[in-house]
Amino acid sequence: MGEGRWFSFVVAVLATWRLTHLLASEDGPGDIIANLRQWLGNGFFGKLMDCFYCTSLWIAAPIACLLMNKWREWPLLWLALSGASCLLERSGNRPLAPPQTSPEEE
Image: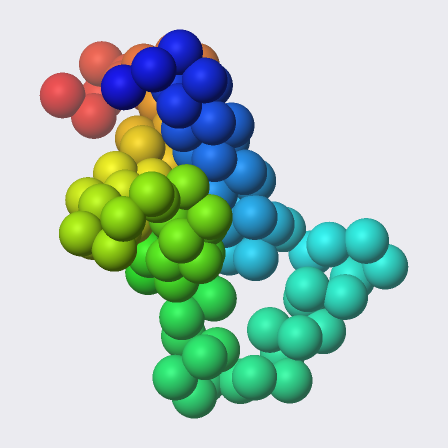
């Protein structure tokens, strides 16, 4: 993979993470995403927006189309973009400090 392809891949991973995080975890500007999520309710698309991992698959699919040179690359790029955005999400959700237990709880 050439240097330009790596750069494009990294930018695509960041874009996938950003769009997925916006749709699955944020209210959006003017609460537009929160209103959309509420309008979709508990149907298929409403539940889809509640799951970061599910949403990342749907967001990564068209972005993978932009990166691919040949159609046979698409499945690997699709899963790689989704997987990398999931890793970014997990790495950012670590607690800052381990939970403190009191002597009474032990």
